[in-house]
Length: 305
Image (cartoon, rainbow, N blue to C red):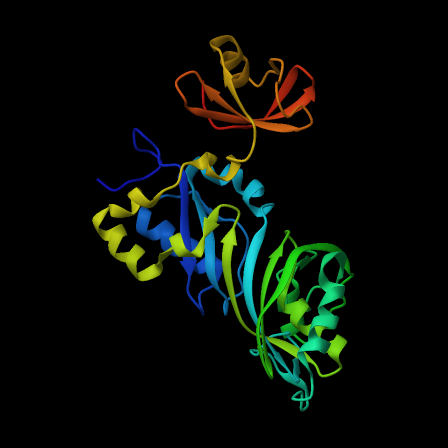
């Protein structure tokens, strides 16, 4: 019998998928939904079609934890081509500027990068999935409408040069959510006065999920036919393993499943506002949010009564 969410033991977990070039993130979700026969499938963090790398796919009740994975730090390997500027900020777009960038030195590049570390304001690309009145900006831009986006605060925890062989600059980036690597490529080129566009992008890490451990689409296609794909599932709480944990006695477990505040005195990291909750048998029950030193409100409950 095909696996589905109506089975006696519904599947819930996370697949670490290596998204191939030319596939959208939605393509991967649809592929896995068809192959697993599971209806509730989502992803944590869109990758541009041309990009490859880590795309965590959440199945079943694990989809309720997507927001915490979207918030996780991400690592990218980006190749920037200097001397060219496009309307999409990558090489798939129409060229709006082209010049000789061979005179740009490594010292100049290093100096330009200082403005893109830490917290700073970034303007997203016009061709992006950000929505205006429910319509993605890239659709408006493709229709010829003028798209103006406001800058927003982003954070880069690490920005290192991996190599520089003009006109190609290869970077490794650790960043928080909301950061656009295409905008970084464009802005570096602008800072150097020669233009820049993203030539290639690999997402090598999302939280604890690494590209070295990810499964490619063709392997997954074969394993979905045999059923072996289930062995690749990470537990839903994999995205929360850095958080403090609480083991609930039966009284608190009963309060939890009825949506009531859970009462216990936290120890250790008293400043943390969330924790993960487990039963005495080790079953993952919920995400709790602190209301006071001894009161925790259920934020995401994954267990039923």
